[in-house]
Length: 202
Image 1 (tube, one colour):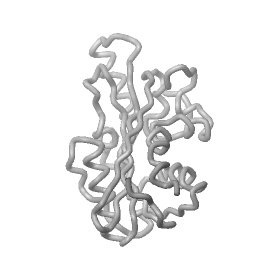
Image 2: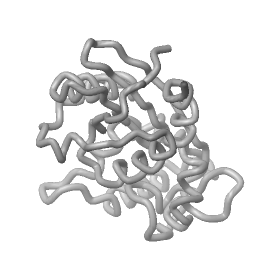
Image 3: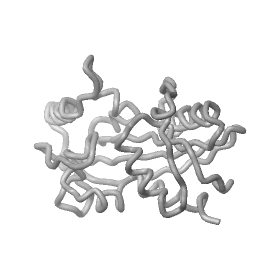
């Protein structure tokens, strides 16, 4: 595994929520992060049907555009009764002509589950794939998951995306109700990051 020795890297994302989470996770390792959005990079088309494939597209695009190592995050929610949908299309399900509307997407998911008369509890998992890519084309991939169930109605104003309907296994609160630090410690992103740590450590 290649070690990330550079102190500065690009987060291949325009998502401010992800930037905050990842910057906090990287801070103890002396790494500073700038987002692709802050550098004025466009978002490349995510044409793959796996988290790994799309993470690679974003990381390599940002690394080549900046000349710096780039870290990408491709993540989403998989719901067992919906054939693991929306999966890599989690953000797409929230798209509207006026931008992303996650409350609308969460209501859509609940209505689909109810229409299917799916077996309860509605099992789900968040998936996160992190990719570090270097300008020379090398990359490293790290996958993390957290299991839970889909609940309704939406609960909590913390977090972002589908957090208000996801209740992690063994907990009574949704990700949307949890203190951000508590969520970060057990999230799919934290699971992936724990595997990435080996790449950051001397």
